[in-house]
Length: 432
Image (tube, rainbow, N blue to C red; front, side):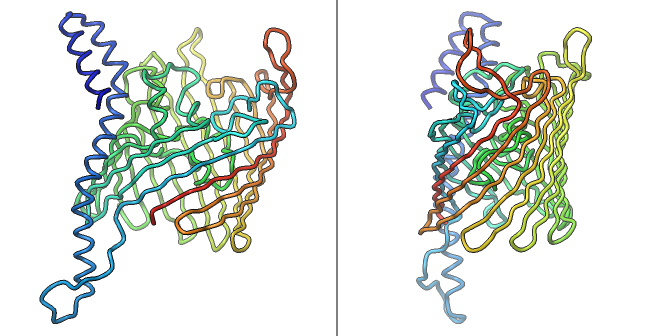
């Protein structure tokens, strides 16, 4: 609230000075910070107000269901499960790099980018209430910190939004509403989980500890508005308008647009197609807009889950000769719940950045990751322990991984192959 008050006082001061350009620049820099904080405040207000209303509604429903048929009033019963969910987690990881780079960096990565040291890669806490027919308003607020919150959400080719050091600590800040239209139109506004990608920013929600290359170069979060509608039991469509491809980058003032179709082909197979189109550089003419497609097919049966994801992105770059940049990636994870608390995952993948537009380096990457996981539940907590082996191979004019000591002028040598042995320990808490 204090930040919002300071922003308002500063804006008034600039207007009083008749500094039109300064006012515009100020609003340009502060718009994301104010919007994030406003969404967070809205979530808090909804949380306080709706909690009392929905708790009373839920308790009344339980009392009514437990009352005898001839009863004229409610009878005492056990409290209903809350419509609200509270959660938190801590994620510690150690990545042993057999190249032992002096700078301790996993080159060109946005998550788990520190090696040969024990780190708190991510910690977070928040609350959430889903929009439903008997309670049409929903809200979500989450905050986060750790190594993985330092690099995600930024672009290698565009400047950061002002206040990014604060905004990167928000994992969610949104409100939603389920409109009583047909099968139910759900509208969500604020900062929400990305509609693109198979993997989450949080390792606790993924099969493996380290994310694939495609995940680190697609948005983990989106800032804007989306609307989703189930046309049939098998087909759901979603449209969205967001500020930029990466929510903490600000190449221009033009929003990006996209849509998604989810089709349940069978009880075991789901197919998802998401596309995005928008200007991701200072030049906003339509010919320079980026087109991106993310295709996912997931098959689940019993203890086995597998998926295939293919991503492709292209855009004409506003440089001499107007070259067209091209990027693509794919992964094929296989996950198997072995017995009890144990599971294992294999994930082959590749990524090709022909022009260095996404990773910052012209390279072709092949990687293979294997993970063994054990989950230990206790009360409302889960302790997740993972042992992971990963090998990456990067070839091309800009390819390679850091190795060994610092050379002359702070340069670290590059080699094409890197092997990692990762140990992850994640502790999670959920209200129910």
